[in-house]
Length: 69
Picture 1 (tube, one colour):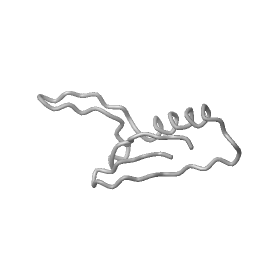
Picture 2 (cartoon, one colour):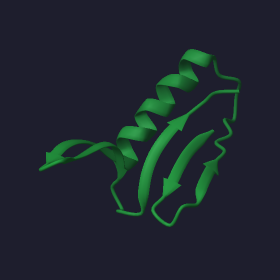
Picture 3 (cartoon, one colour):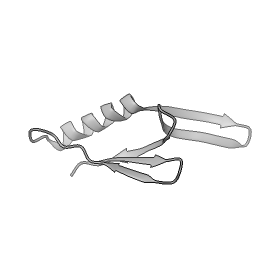
Picture 4 (spheres, helix red, strand yellow):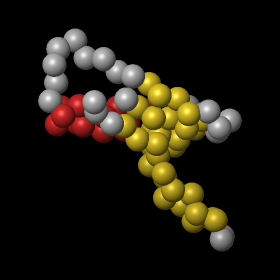
């Protein structure tokens, strides 16, 4: 399950199904690959504001995380 927080406040839960059984390690590895494909990590300090996190490459929100079930 991929968790995306859009800038309009909506939380999107994107369920990914695999064709064959996968281990938790495989799921975790895929989650990291997917995150890096759709988002860019930002660590920036602008004056008294800090901007840090995984921002979606299309500019619509932030990548909040993923979990394997």
